[in-house]
Length: 197
Image (cartoon, rainbow, N blue to C red):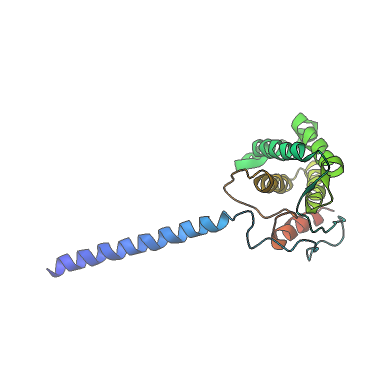
């Protein structure tokens, strides 16, 4: 009888431990899948602590705004370039990226042209303009220094913008955009850029 109680207690304790571990793992993964309107979103119209210096950011009370008649095209570009960057940098592809020929690739040139168009013609004054400023500098850092992390951050900007603006389903929000991100994550991108400039 004591043997049955000991075995039963061991099984019970093992099950409890398994449940605790499972809940811990799923809770962490649930936290990483923050909704677009997460609590970590910074207050609009405020500069981040680290954003003084190499890039002139323009704080805005609008997350994203479109030039008249350009909303559909902006949404398409965000989606297309997110997909392009998924291929280029997502899921570990950045580690296999040939930086020596990156500036010569048609998709990279198209990305540069789209970032410029979004900045000048697609987006109206809003926090998303600051994201395009970061994107432009990250592209420069990648080309000049053959740097992988700058391509990752570039991918994360388009990933988050596509997720928020087009409601594209993603497994994680990186919170790196001025338009929708958190101050801490935005500052990480800025600090990374400032190490090269």
